[in-house]
Length: 207
Image (cartoon, rainbow, N blue to C red; front, side, top):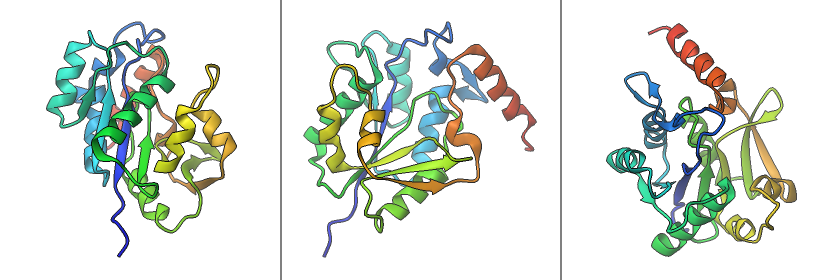
């Protein structure tokens, strides 16, 4: 009997929101905050564990993430790049759960309050029958998030050079692209204009 597939959501949340000008993950989103919406979407998906990497002094974010049921990793040194946060999360998963190569981890930025749990679940469903090590959703021929990686790919993430990001791993591997009907896979919040547009979309949606 094959060992059941385990899956882990990696949420790098140690950024400084420099382009937003304020802590974007704590901005209001509906009746909650951006990060609460992100974690709620992950909770609605079929992933087994949610691992969030946070800066040491980000105490309110740490509290919210723990309250939401995520595993919070607070490194002794604040990550300077998203790549570093991802590496820290992967080491935590390795130490706590010792995944096998056929397990999976999914990656999406922490500033996507419209993250689709349905897309994450579709990726997991397809993965069991897909020979590719990486699966990515696409909309209008453009890749988005979350991206699913076979656990064995984490070795390549740890081998990235100083000037490389996780996107370099995608360029080196076969990527199975899953067509999606929604632009939500592209909608992160980098600037005040992004946030204003996202809030407008939320207001305009039928209740």
